[in-house]
Amino acid sequence: MTNAIIQPNPTDFSERDKISYYFKVIDEILEGVFKPRFRLFDNFINYYTKGTYYDSSKIDFGQIIQNFPISESVSASLYLKDPYFSITTNQWRNISAHKTFTINKDSIKIEYGKKNIKTLNISFEQLKMILDWSQDIYRVIRLAEVFISLNFIKEVVDNLGGTDKMNLRFESVLMHLIHNIQIVGFQFLSTIEQDKTFILRLKKKNNFDLKDSVIHASQFLEHIASAVYDDEFTRDKFTDVQVQVMDDNNEKFASSTVRISSAMRKLKKEINLDEYIQCIDFNINNFA
Image (cartoon, rainbow, N blue to C red; front, side, top):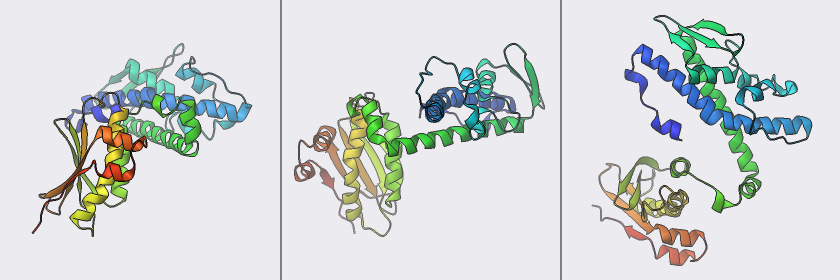
């Protein structure tokens, strides 16, 4: 999530700066988000092939790639090396992180390896292909992680020490929530931080009047409140959460607001649904 949020827009970069930026992104993807998931994947594969678990937390990226079970290396080949030059994934990380590349006017010279240094000249277009490959293998291994979590969510939560021990980032949970909100017919417009209130602004559901839309949208309040509360960086930043529903002209709106403490009491089953509804402040304007 951090990688996605802090990325600049490279559209206006010069060609030289754009190439440097591509290497930076490759490093951040392979080192920051792909490697920890590949390490987990390697644990699964070793357990599958050998029937025993081993601790790879002290093994570096290159050793994990090099020692990957041969019997599964063909199926996992896109994880282990790029499909264009057959340079291993960890070497692309090294090239990008240690900046062992030279940007020339019409090509890029890269150097990799420890004892026997190898050099290769690639085009700007080929580097973009490497960037796309690094993004693709991350997306696939991330999706695999999601499937595993969905199928074994209880075991995963228990292994992490229960929900109280889980460190959930607010923006990550919010992204999933917005995705689900759009599936049920709302259109996401924006988020607003107003004083101590976090506001989610939506466009009314298709073929639904505004009143029905805001009642439906109010059902998201406790999920937003939970996302705020579960992240220690936002827990003390907001006291209330609000959902605003805009009309077709994005001018008039209705809203529902609840205190985060009340929503958390509902989630912890300290109050029932009727008591929770009494805590929600509905504001539905009169429309002509």
